[in-house]
Length: 337
Image (cartoon, rainbow, N blue to C red):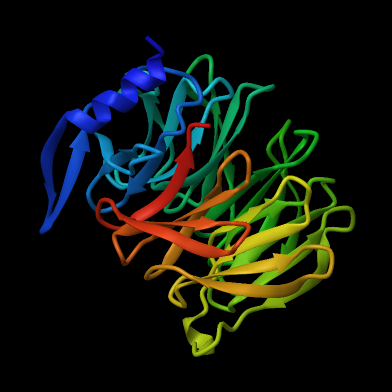
């Protein structure tokens, strides 16, 4: 029997009741191990778990208990492991994607929030919020091999196109650092808006877009000169400027469209990348935060931190399809596709 068909059959027949505070969730039995399962993984900061959703039924197939305050998540290249930064225990949990279980941990600095993986160099670069540092972890030895001092409260991490440079935001310093990946020294800084958070790089590697939460903008950095090349402001209809707090950022592979979550404004902005024009706004849940796309870029997934749910959006029509209850204070979403 086809494994995916068997998994789908089981998800219909086996359910159990699970409670988060006052919220009941239907939990289906775990699926078969298979690559590109389409499973949806949601990290929940306050319930200390990863909720795994079936991509078709949206039923919960597994509640994976993690270390405290799970936030950023990334798969390895083979999608055999899922790495999860857990801020209150100063570790990255390692989840076996086939078993849907935590099978290991990596030590980090204090309060890891986001990270990036360089598979070629077998390195994980971790922004440690309270330590004001970037930990460099050797993926084969599972140890920290370098600590790089940064500005206060680093968050966003991005690896340059050729892997030679690392970019890190400092929320308190209103800075973006450029760091040499070989020796770990900061080569250049650029001042951006207030409280810079996350990155998206254009596919040609020439620009780095960064959300600035408290100034309500996206700053565009020219990477050759390492200067600000422009900025984009947002104001959804009926919202106050003070509600606009951009955090999450995703860009299509062709570099034509960017999606920006606007935090307390409860919208996602659609931006034409070449013209930098805001094309439209999509209403989502309370405090829209993390955002990701399906591999075919037909669907968007948004974590709504104060709604305790995620919103799935049809990218073509730019309309929400469904909102799904998850755990408490969802931070981010990744898809096994």
